[in-house]
Length: 109
Image (cartoon, rainbow, N blue to C red):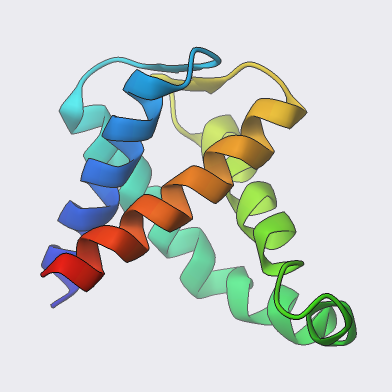
């Protein structure tokens, strides 16, 4: 199941990087690496960020989770060599689109 989730997230990252002009990605294997790094970061500190910001998540009806996803995506950008996001606004848009594409692909399958 983990490998399927990584592949779905890789497809989402790859599609969004081709659609959004502010994201540079080398190839699909880079998208796989981005998905793996993002998943590891999310596993290690994502739960802590959700726990620490739970009041904001509740107040915003879950929308603050996109801020957390954008932060995790920014960290992934800093760690991964062949993955680059141009600016903060692109990071937020990319985090939103990657989350939506990921959910859509999982919903279809």
